[in-house]
Length: 207
Image (cartoon, rainbow, N blue to C red; front, side, top):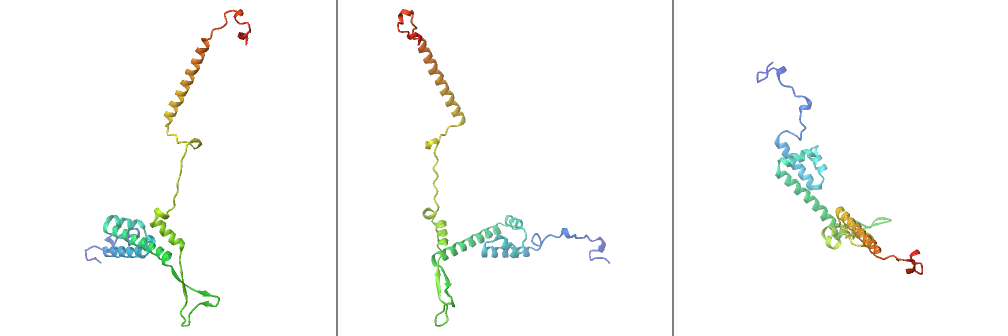
């Protein structure tokens, strides 16, 4: 039996399993566009790239990176979605720290309610989250400050000499010491010795 192209079934090229691309790698462009949209939606929702890939049906992070390199508009939308998700987290931290959350009042008998059966609530604030928010946005006031003081030997100034400068200083000191030693020897040679024993009646020369 011939195919419409006039080619027999046995002559048609065979597609092996390893030749079949994964769905996110190739396929209709409309499918890729749908995956991109789903990825951005989920990334904007929770800011988690792995969860966004699973939601969009994309297995490898390299696929997203390739799409971003090929489509600058998609890359910009991904960055904006991630930034919006971070802003949501920051807003929630601020809300819990400044405005608090409503919590039910529980007694040994159960949840406390009023005469109409409406449960009583109380505001619970988070000082820890408020401190984190303050450190992030008011770092010059509430950020952790660390001062490191560096000193040299015995608390003195730090020596900035290079190894060559230290060697030169050492050589100059040795030369100065040799000069002083030579000067002392020459001065000692100038002291006259007693010419005769009579000139040294107290025997100083023998000391």
